Image (tube, rainbow, N blue to C red; front, side, top):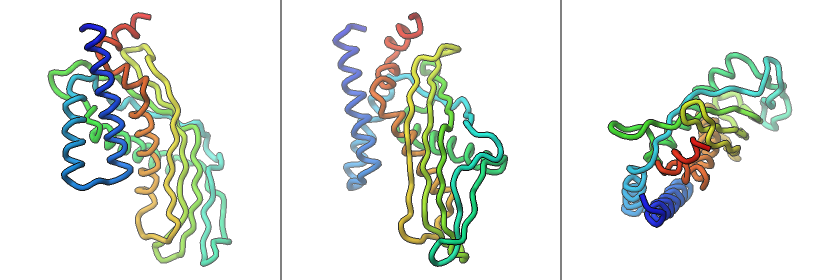
Length: 212
């Protein structure tokens, strides 16, 4: 692959990734979204896929991660601590958010394609502030910070840290777990919009990086 061809592919990939992120955060008419998705799929077909490889949390049992309150004025509250139950929920929503965003970016592994690069995550920060009205409705939100590592085999070829958040200003009956997933989805989109990662997804570039 020539230098000119590699640069052209990288430029196309960055344009498509930017268009995909814009389409997600600012919904366009259905015909426009279909056009964006088609272009992104065509570009991604020549790129290295990504695959989930697990996660860890920078928390120990009992560490404070926020607070939950109740009542009309949200004054009666208690601290929320890291626990095994919360870890299971966080892990499930983080992986689902990553897989969803990977599918939207057309970077999930496909048959007869180069081996996927492995992506692992470390949850560095989780802040939750939820107020329950007692009837299944709540308001508040989540803030997260995630460190991502991208590996080719045993070698780390890229690292980046991203943030995400979700805030319900008005009361809602939407399950808080979905709101947490939305916060992780924004963090995952930050990873997939990273220009250096997009460069590494070019097969020739990944090979060079792995030899350094």
